[in-house]
Image (cartoon, rainbow, N blue to C red; front, side, top):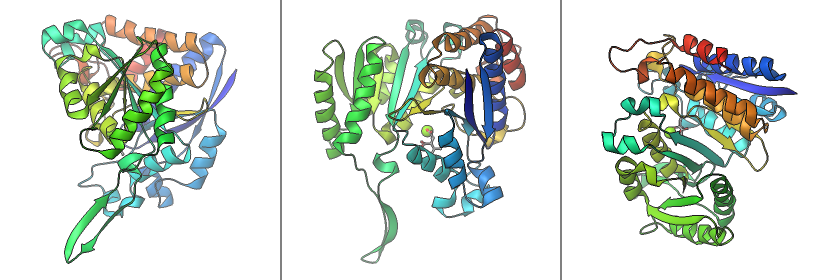
Length: 360
Ligand code: IPM
Ligand code: MG
């Protein structure tokens, strides 16, 4: 089969890590008889530099015409980059939020799995790490505080900033259904994370998710307050299977979940709409401090490509091949700087790509 993939390399380490994922996909194509065509598109800071805006209609339309989107990362140093002198709606992040909304990517899947080989890189207590963990963070991606009305103005002579958190029942139901569907293919447990002791929006999430849960009698349904969840993630992460939550809580908890795997450079993500279409990107940021040094960890991006094969193209065997190749290089002891123990030999970003591509 032939697949057209929109490739948004973006800023910072984005170009380096996406190039490695493309290399691995080409290797998959050769082995399994597929052709992957990459359509390079600009978004984020690099688009500001060329087009004056972080996201153009052309990028949106071309991305829509492709079978899926593979992305690196966007943004720069918020204190020094000239991109952050622009008004907020013209900054790199606005491009990312804009494409999520334009492509209706409401379901963000961030799997956090502790590779046995990386237990030493896990910052948790040894007895906690020893139990391992394997969870799927499901973050709502096109609603809540990120997309509510916001403004800053003087009210009664006092400068006031307002951000609004809105969800309707349909937005909650569609991602809750996806979460339960995914749980059915995993360990059949969903934990809804909210702040229902304070927020109306969280109370609606509970009500709607409870209704959805009733249609999945085989799935155990639990609720947890977000502050407790932040604590449980470091105390006993093995308890979680699917974690379902709203946009802002998901942003924060998914960084926490990624860090306990050893490095944010290990965590892939998929952002899906109602169809098979998705945008696949590492959960980490553009890491401007290490950009261009060829030391970034490309594994999260390579695993994001595997998620693309699985969720958008139904190529499970090929996705397995990538995940197995990643496990193999880790077992063989290859490490990028972020996951190496002190004194352990380190490989560069492109070498890691070569090693994984060679093991497909
Ligand atoms: C993420 C990032 C983005 C977000 C930023 C870059 C806007 O942190 O994908 O988690 O907050 O969603
Ligand atoms: Mg984030």
